[in-house]
Length: 162
Ligand code: ADP
Image (tube, rainbow, N blue to C red; front, side, top):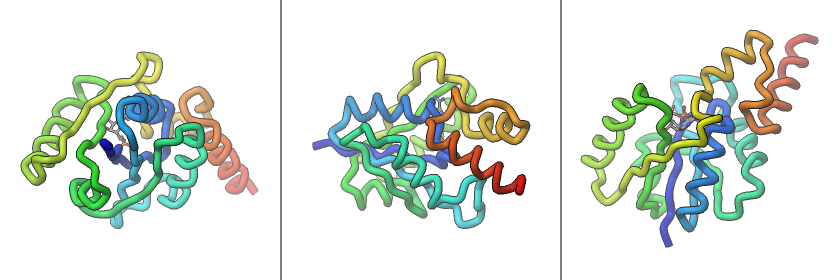
């Protein structure tokens, strides 16, 4: 049984992330999507809400688990008995950082392998930071994020308006 961890900020989860997750769930027996907690950065969406939104967005994927962690990804992966880390690649600009990260992780724990996946072209340009930018400028993000994320952010907007 091969378990893979898909780590990231997911602030918030997008249809790009979901596409990667769908593919990973077809390849591996179990996939844990794990939100990295950064104690120095609160982020755009609080971590508890990020986890809840992911849970609502992956209901249809029976072999996907949702969790969060703090500290080194490889330590979390070891603790979960995972041999694989999933990362996504969008463009050449992602490559250098992702390559460094995977090599650093490999130097720390050679038994854990990083697997890179890509999305369908229509989701390729989507990033959490693009979503934030569009949302904060009152643009329509519904095509780019799962429904629970869109609903959550629209409701949050209403709370701020009152
Ligand atoms: P991090 O802060 O760790 O980069 P992100 O939540 O931004 O976390 O992304 C998690 C992973 O998903 C990264 O490997 C990133 O490259 C990948 N990813 C994000 N959006 C896409 C997308 N649209 N297509 C392919 N990979 C993506």
